[in-house]
Length: 206
Image (cartoon, rainbow, N blue to C red):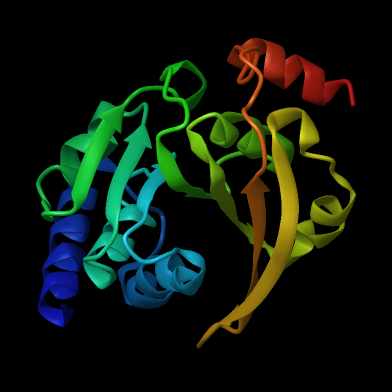
């Protein structure tokens, strides 16, 4: 596993010199990319089908799939450049989907839907809820600064209910990460997710 992580790091930063895949300096890769991606792996049930919304070049989907071979993980992103790189680093339990999250049409297919702060929390929940199965979990990876919003935002329109909010400190840089765990308690209404322009306009007016 360590060898695979080292190989991924080499490939990422070799490609990054040409393709601008990440802004994280190489010396911080293991903490800010690898470790950050797997901090909350314990909230992912054994054998779960996982969707990573907005995975970029592979975070958190690639480290999660590497660390947890029991999971089946799909990385979803609209950037062919990002997924093009990710596809050069295959794992048996990792797939890729090239699409915009609000347009992909996936509904009720995954046990866990996650993503690393791909948008403001209400938007991330809207684009993450539909792909999740009833009884599954949406677990956005957020910073500690989102705690007040997590506590105040009502996700019930999307069929979600806040079940827990797990805080874990990222070692070395001692940054506090927040992992709100939303249970999918009913089907997401068919009108969600909305088109991106409508989502953005609505959130700007609130």
